[in-house]
Amino acid sequence: METSTPDVQFLRSLMKAHPDFPKKGIVFLDIFPIFRDPLGSETLITHLLFHLTSVTIPRTPNKKIDVVVGLDARGFLLGPIIALRLGAAFVPVRKRGKLPGKCIQATYEKEYGPDIFEMQSDAIQPGQNVIVVDDLIATGGSAKAAGELVAQLGSKVVEYLFIVELAFLKGVEKLDAPAYSIVKEND
Ligand SMILES: O=P(O)(O)OC[C@H]1O[C@H](OP(=O)(O)OP(=O)(O)O)[C@H](O)[C@@H]1O
Ligand SMILES: Nc1ncnc2[nH]cnc12
Image (tube, rainbow, N blue to C red; front, side):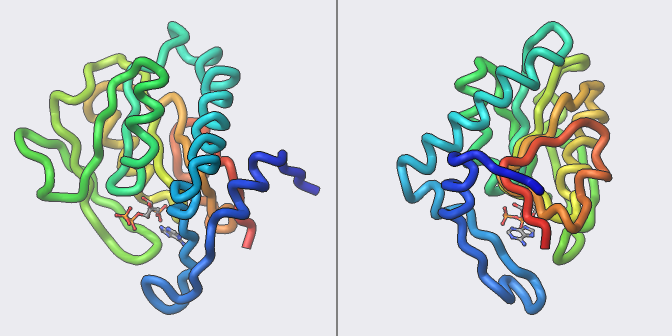
């Protein structure tokens, strides 16, 4: 039996499930109500920072996270706050055509269709320690493509971080580094 702590239960209670959005058959789990509640936002960031400082950083080479990569668009809610608190850089991964300058690309399949991700070529230096953050992992296509972009620039993802994991879709099995999710949805 899986048990969860009061902060995790509180965060899960703030999320709302929307059946058949954005299309029939998808149960969309909305994380925005967490950000509507200041205590929700505080609980979320405190939980993630505790995990990063007690688990992730101790096992990271040089004990330092250099770059936080956030995925378009809801990864942008978390990424800059975490980066600021860690003293790390924030780097966006965006859908095709949104970033100026020289970019690298990775194609991927998501829960509801194909897409292309881009990252600016000079955003990460070779050998930097990177974490990838997003609101949710479903099939894992988006996070895997982000990891491929980091690898193209000669760096390493030390952890993938999510608020929610749709565990029944087994997306984390596609990833090349450990993943941490606050809430695991099993059906
Ligand atoms: O694990 P996957 O199957 O790849 O799905 C997860 C991704 O899908 C959602 O983003 P979406 O592409 O809908 O973009 P949005 O944040 O702009 O709504 C979500 O925020 C993740 O990025
Ligand atoms: N079921 C889902 N709920 C919320 N965001 C998603 N992104 C991909 N699948 C999703």
